[in-house]
Length: 333
Image 1 (cartoon, rainbow, N blue to C red):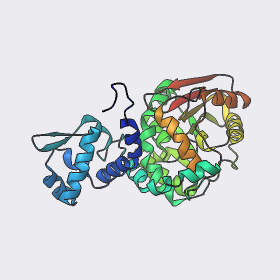
Image 2: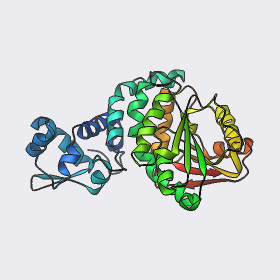
Image 3: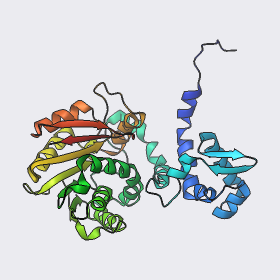
């Protein structure tokens, strides 16, 4: 019998079985379990029939999702919670199910983290400096939902909708979600992104889904080596790039961006950023391990790091703005 104030193993057990949780969620998403429950709910047998999976498998993932609080059970019938309906039913801009699938597929890579921690060098084949890595074709569209509401928030703060015929450069734009959101808000604007050729192909399709592809263009290439031009853009976007770069590379890229901005132009940075004492959102803190696993020099950086890099690059006004998500927005001019 344990003492009344003895430590509980609950948190440690949750972490130990975290891989199980990710795999169960990814399995439920891949097999359309949440979609099957969206129109009124069902029993395990009905879910199995709708999704084409075994009754035994359906029961297992339903048990897991109910235990996580993503699905409710009442009278033998399972239904989505509002959280599951918002983030795990395909077809919604906030859909994170594809990300859950990608993370499930990558669990074997995470087993190599102890070696990466020991050496400080990446152990995964999916490193960020590989051009047209097939991994991007799965990851890039899967994580677009994370950026969608942040791009909207930045658009509102900057008044993009009423800014007139402005243009921007999105450095390492990935899915093109920032340009898609901003071009949808402003029908006079033009967006340009620079990324690997295969990633840009994904972006063209994603942006086209918003009906704004005629005002979107992409530059194929390595943004470390490509000239951004001088005084060409009203805005620049640097979203979820800094975490994969060494401090010196971030300073060099910020300098290039500043030259590319018109006088009075604004750089928008979005990333997982820690407080100066290296505390912050749990997701942002965990993300440092992902960077050790998959990058040569990346990490989750502090607010002080961004302030220092941007100042060194010549920006004089730097404003860090929290968001409801694990990421932070930075506006620099």
